[in-house]
Length: 105
Image (tube, rainbow, N blue to C red; front, side):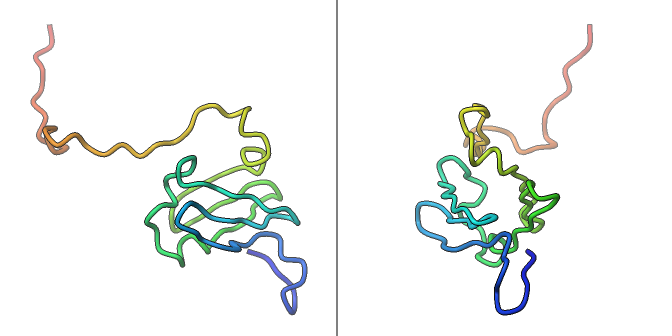
């Protein structure tokens, strides 16, 4: 986050966190990121969500969450049809590392 004295010229900030998503202010524009479309922000610490950086003038980065977004994603979501989703492990699946090896033929 980059700002000058008295909060002038703020390039990026998290304006509000709601039960439905987060409001971002980026370079003079507001964006609403729903948890449905951006599930990696759900259930995160406020401090981690607020620690957003604007890199190279077009790249948003949350270092504590390891989340990257380009502003174009927010402005033109139709250009990016693939969405991230968090997949919960199936209750009957084996924990990682306990898979049995299959014999090669």
